[in-house]
Image (cartoon, rainbow, N blue to C red; front, top):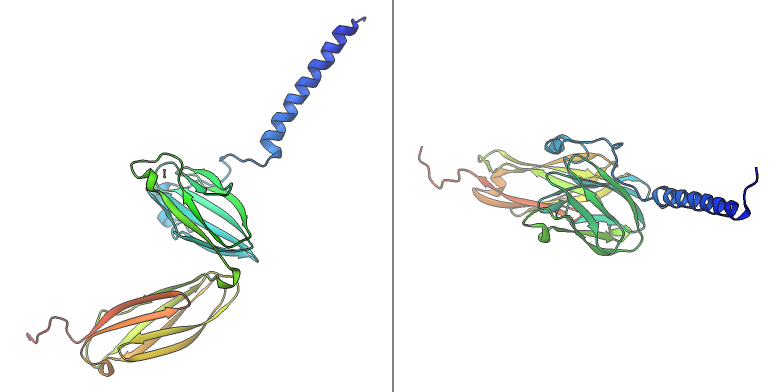
Length: 261
Ligand code: CUA
């Protein structure tokens, strides 16, 4: 078959264009690593966030050497946790979900930016090399408080970073002659074990306990003081470990100020 030279040129030109278009689209959707929220991630019902082991307690967790996972919940009009604290020179994978309406999770000054859709978990991995403070904002209109919806991401020096958490269980009132028992739960979110000192102050007494908490676990430490040593009345207590502290007041004897019996 005889095809005219000009016609042949046009056919070849059109073919090159078509192949070029396909290549461009393929590169744009696959090659650049831009991902859309898809239906491969497991979904979760927004009203079941409280029972979901990833999001019930929004937090940062160590998952490998210099690798962390941050579980973030967005809701009108806050981000949890706030601030999000991570160490420098680390790689952080954010898992973000929404408790109510569509928000965004946008770390100002970085290219970390995702829509947060109720029922979906947006995932992205980011490296942070230098210590610094970043604002976290929402840039999807989500209601009356949208413009106030902001949080903070703090990148701290690796040496200053810890994931120690403290919770204290203490009585409000004890009878004279009994013991005042303070139970501290020290949680270690790092993979390595942590050796630290727990300081309990109550009344005039100071008790120090050395604590070793294995990575990813928690330890309960109970200290007790004789109520008679404290004497009747109100006594303030504080418990400290690393940067964490908790405090309260315990009353020895009755609080109502009288012997009505
Ligand atoms: Cu959340 Cu706007």
